Image 1 (cartoon, rainbow, N blue to C red):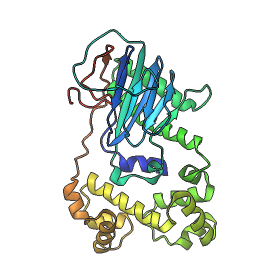
Image 2: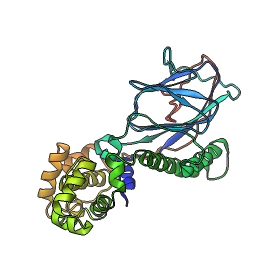
Image 3: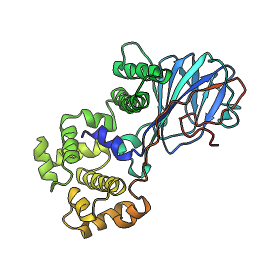
Image 4: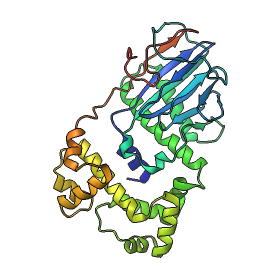
Length: 326
């Protein structure tokens, strides 16, 4: 797998969820912090997204917004968050309002957060500029059509499109920030090759000289460029990636510890346990007991249509979680 796919797969818990949000002015709603990533796509009308410490972001039809760290924010019909209402109370069924959002969330485990994602800003705004990010635009169009429809296999299609949307939003952000940090690392031929080697063969007995020879750089040049772009020396990153992979296997499988140790490059369960405890603060067996396999049961990715009359609040998580929870 490539680095972006690995970053997503390692953090993912369960399936994504989505919902439609239709509103009539005046409207202003506050989204509470969430332990995952959220997104909004404006399907109709216009609005604003307001987050702490940043200028209000104007939204037009087709704009996508990714909230990669689940930060609190406000959707509003004006560039002001004052008086924003939380989503609680009783849903009121009304005809479609002039403004419609597609909202969703991805369940992510931040204890296994990849630095590619932790380095993202709290809000990523991807405007619907003509000719930019055409695949993202196509995914948005397909997803908007599916959540409005009732075709067979709809839930499966929506789940797949939500996964596709996340990848395309990440790609768009990487393209927009190609000259800094991790986005630049993935475009640097030698550093990208080094990352691919570590991700594809984490159990290999890598040494810095082996990795340097593999990508055609000197040890010093590889170490300097790798560290400058990713924030970690190559061998430190390899150790982190091995332990992160092990944590995912402990949660998502029943593999014995010695098999997991071999899969992440350790010759004995003792050496593996020692390294794992340094990373996570507890031995792998206890980590598995606290985070048993099967805990990540998938949640259905179903669209929950709710129409909001001006001044009414809704008892529904606008990112698509269980209806009726407050």
